[in-house]
Amino acid sequence: AAMFYYENHLDIRKAVEYIDAAVAESPRHIGMLHRQALIHAEAGDTAGALVAARKSLAGAAQGGPELRAEYTRLNEALIAKLTGGSNK
Image (cartoon, rainbow, N blue to C red):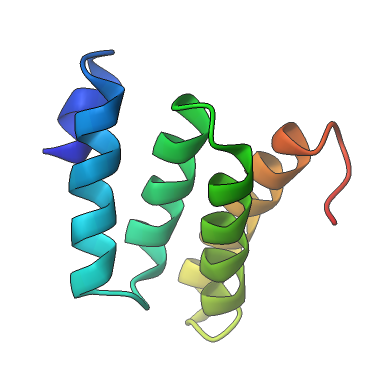
């Protein structure tokens, strides 16, 4: 439901509510964390987005090669966008 709200530019507060609940259920799911980062960024919560993206990035480092490569790329790009080009 969170991604439906996000992708269709609907109520971003609802998207935040749904993704936060999903992450609470699966706090180590790197895909869910990445989606949380995207949604929080869209909602204007840069700090929350960075926390989620960094958690997803850390989790990706523990994944298999394909998963690691994809989520490393996605999260590093989002972190750079949110920090103005810095990956810190």
